[in-house]
Image 1 (cartoon, rainbow, N blue to C red):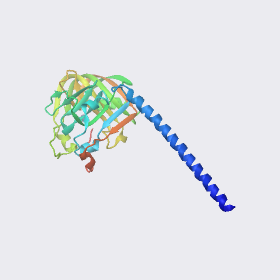
Image 2 (tube, rainbow, N blue to C red):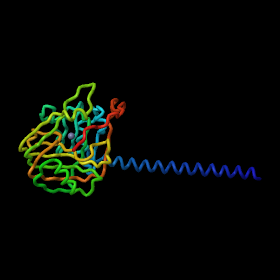
Image 3 (cartoon, rainbow, N blue to C red):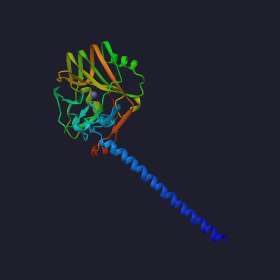
Image 4 (cartoon, protein in one colour):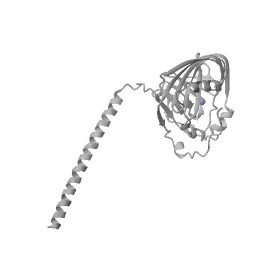
Length: 281
Ligand SMILES: [Zn+2]
């Protein structure tokens, strides 16, 4: 009875398929249960539990160049992403620096502020700093010398690093940002050469920042990016140049990268037509 035989075979096949599907479904459900178990364990940790060795990155460099000067990240949220940071506030209202969990804002007049939890951030890099390597350097005539001497001590240039570099600076030259008004008309590449400049002699303080490998491309700033805060909390900004007799360098080796984009209409519409023109030394 070949017809019946084929029919039976089909029935068996359908039965087997249904069995397999049901088994798969259960397996997926079990996996989901396991995942949610893991998630709930993570949630149970204290909200400020430190997650070392992760680079938190909000917004992308190329969007910043294309006049995306507003983000949705608050100062309060940023403090859950790291205890050191650099970046800028919405409307480019000053340079952002965070040291040991204290957040600062250096406005275009060079005055230092401590913004409240509600302050909004346009761009930032942050991490919970844990020193993996430290060394002292003497007679540092300029920024370029620091870069070269740190480069020689890095185990690889293919990962991320965070820095805390403390010392007494004979001279410190910092850049600021001019606050922009909407609709934003000028890209960061045009604003940077015209940025306000703040200078101090004989100032003690900390440079905080990051090294990103070249592979970050248009997402972040490749190479070194440092911001400065004086010990007396009165002076700081984006490090442009300096000279120091002695610096204590601590660095955190970072192998993990957490990347977040701004959920704004401006970001949804941006076309990234403008490439960054300003070349760092
Ligand atoms: Zn900067």
